[in-house]
Picture (cartoon, rainbow, N blue to C red):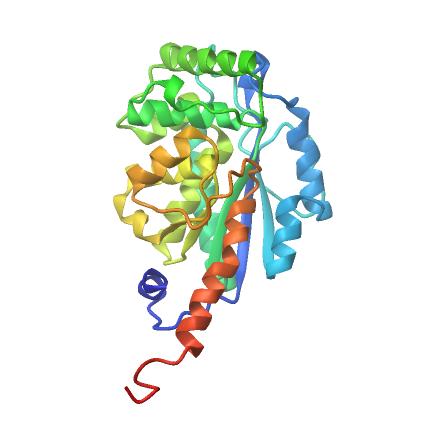
Length: 304
């Protein structure tokens, strides 16, 4: 509540208008068999978001939050109505054999995220959550985390969508191979995002930067959005104060990155869903904090 007041400049902030932004992109690294689901699921979920049938839709309706779906890099050739089409390219390349994308493409995705955040502020949104959809993106996120922290992939790679032991071993090997092939510069967040990241990860990085620039508080979700937030903090340390961590997922890299950013999660429910679902689940906690500040009697009110 104190940080919300500081961000908004209001003793008792109004956060009645909330939005959940879901950035979408596909990953060429899925060709290496790192996910329990085929890459086509990204497109299917984009359609599901637009129909209002995904978990993030259900949870957002329950708390009165708007859902904005932004395609920055899916493989879909035709997008359903309701998607914000900001596609940079049709999915990333396979980072196990070369860079996931060009630096200019990563920069474009970052700029798109910045613009989306600024647009929300103009529209009157007062609290934003950020999430993603992209089969294979825990592999890319783990590679980004390893590249930027220097921590070995074996300590960061998790089970993602629920892969078995053999697939996990393959995932670790692919992350290590991707880092060896691309040699990302750990002190250059954009270089890391371009070589072993994803378009939706880069866009979320930009979203965090853009939100901070217009004093819009951002609630991050699980590992993927936290990796993006970590990249944003590395680009501009000042954005840290505009971030809130909604939950702690089961991905091992998640806690490590939250600690490095300096954030403590509000919820620990062993989630692995993604989409921004954890961010939306935390929204009522923000509402409760504001309600207490507005309505709860103080000792002074009691005459003490």
